[in-house]
Structures are given as structure tokens and as C-alpha cells.
Image 1 (cartoon, rainbow, N blue to C red):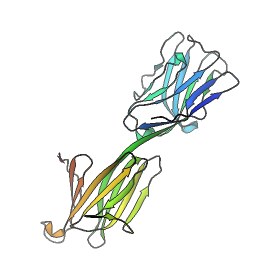
Image 2: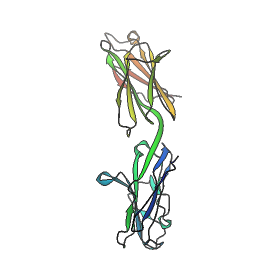
Image 3: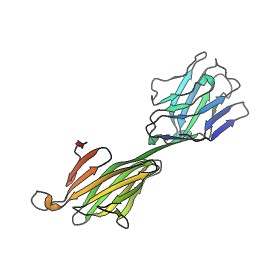
Image 4: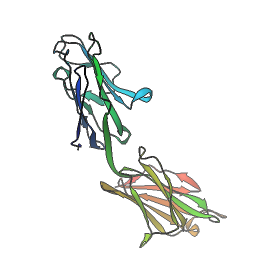
Length: 267
């Protein structure tokens, strides 16, 4: 999924570079960032180097670098090159397009392509505007937990990831829960695509569902607190908390006093 707008940059030295202003991708799928160039001194036999960076200036990160000696037909990356990145285009045909395999949310950012033709004065060029990559993902619940005590009350927290940032709703046994009992604990920067919601006054013997949604999908996880009388231990004890994650087949997690994650899945 890509945005149709293109940027075309040129200068007085005869450089011309064309990139796409914005590219959209789905998490887990490959994406291509288009970039092409022309240069009056470049021929099919000239040596050249191609660099793709994420970010601009000193804080940028080089993601891909390849060199093509004079007469070579391909541009070879170095031995330490991350295999998630490769050239989709052929620099010998003035195509520097970059392919990113299995796009992830952390790939969101602005990318810049650069080409260098050694042996000529001012024979390097980089588009200054760059290409904005937006990776979108359906909601995924990263964690559902409970904290508190019988005296102070129990609070449930639901941490969610997705892009666009998901909306979170809490559902009680038979109804949508709204009002002062629900509050967003944190909403990290949009680049992180994480948000956390808290439900106060969680009661033993009740079931609560965290539901996260955005235009790409929905994820749910359900929490059930067993009443204290069902816990067979002597003396005062906190309720037994049973968490049912409904997103990846039924994962059962038991909490007794402290969180214990059980690696058992019910299909």
C-alpha cells in the first residue's frame, strides 16, 4: 500500500532524484521504497555506491550500503549487511529502490537514499525530503495484569500495541464499562504505538474483558477473579486471579499473590 505522491529533486550540477513522499505498509509484509536518479557523468560502466539511511543528520542510522566497481553489473553489500534490506532496483539502470522484508512497527520513520559516483567533482546526491514510511498493524494486547489488595481495592491494567493507536474499552459481565473507573495510564509517543488503560475497583467473582480495536482489527483478553473463599489456603489470602487471553487460542495464566505465567495453551 503506497501513497501516490512523488518528490522530484534536482540541482544545477545535473543531478535529478525522484522518491515517493510517503509509503504505507502492513506489519509482517514486505515494502518497497522507490528511489531513482539521473546524473550527467554516470554511465553503465561508472563505479558507484548506494546508501540508505533512516533519519537525517548525526542521529541517522545506515540501513543499507552497497558498492559497484567499474564494469560490475550488480551492487554488492558488505558482509555485515542486515538481510532484511536489499535493493529492489538496479543502480545500473538508475533505480535505487529499497526493499524491506517483513515490515515492523519499529520501521516507522523517514528514509533517505544517497548515490555516489566516485571520480567526479560533486558526484554525490541525496534527496533532502526523504520518504516517510508508515507501518500499520492490527491491535495486539501485550499484557493484562491486576495489582492492589483487598483493603485498597484491585486495579486491572491492559497494555496494547497497534497502528493506528488502538482504542481500548473495558467490558463487564454484561455491559460496556464507562465513566470514572476507567483511565488511560499512559499513551507513549505515536512512534512507539503503545497505550495502557486501567480499570479501577475490580471485584472478585467478576469477569472483565479488555477490548482493543483500530481500523485494521480487534484483539481481546479476559480476566476473571475467583472470590477469596475459593482459595484453599489458611489465613487471609488475596483472591485467585485467572486471566484468559483470547487472542492466540486460549492461554490460561494463574496469579496467586504474585504473577505466575503458565505455558499451557488450550486449543
